[in-house]
Length: 433
Image (cartoon, rainbow, N blue to C red):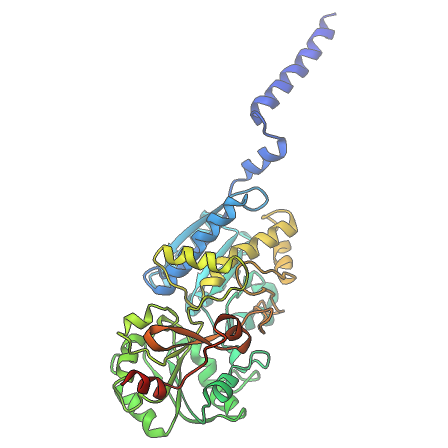
């Protein structure tokens, strides 16, 4: 009789312990999710820069939005931010900490030089610490060329950003902005002396020629090429040389140059009636107009801060971004949507721990959230060509700082169908300058 009593009591005790352990209303599956803890994402960027601040804020909003919707597979997402201060040793130390100590599934890295450094560190760590790396605000072709050349070593790396190779891309045809929209006959190409501009300056052997050679074949007469230090403050001699070359348009490929000073000197120089187009950096911001005291009149920039309603989520995101005192730069949308690409991959695989499977999921990803549709090519670059994929869009500062989308035509028609590019000389005449 005693044994008949003991056995049921043991069962009751086990059942009671299970109830206490799970808590009221908590299933075993939910408890397993809790025990797994948050999915961690790291970010390394120069937080004192406009792009660093925009990326950081975009990621913070993304985490808040995602967690409000239940996170990823019921697990919250935790963002860990590291300030690189633009110093490579600090970048490397931060990367190691995020991967080895914090256990991040994904690390988002800003900048070309930091990307190269972290790819090498990541390759060394990957076997023991499997993880993913996304790189934003890096346009040099090198990182994703490395993925193609040594896939097994660098397969953890993806670049959700426009590569400089887009300038040669027949699907986006950036040169047509100059030939068909601006009406350029004679072009000056200036590049800041940074790693990311090397393909534009010199080309990549076996892949494509310099930008001057490539665009020359597209009908643009490149009459001047040069480069500047990012520490440059006196641009007048360069502007005088450009004016003397007979150029009617300048393409200044820059991300870190003091473009506010450049704009002020341009507006007072012999080159003031020569149309100015830049690639990245501060001119992307609507605030650039105030930064230059209106000297940015007529200035065109890649990834201008215009309100493009890619989806119903785009404009609410930009409104929230600006409410936090932050503007949109080249990498803003990419930063926000990086986490949603991770979410899509994790939900496809069913967990965040099988990084090999996550890599395969990202390689077949096709996703749209607040921006254009994401899809990676075999080198882990985003596919370009809007619609539906990544665009290379340009805008222009016109009267009173109004920013007008000028290229590509499909986006211009959506954002400002009644507005077009206007040559700077005409804008200056209208403004009485």
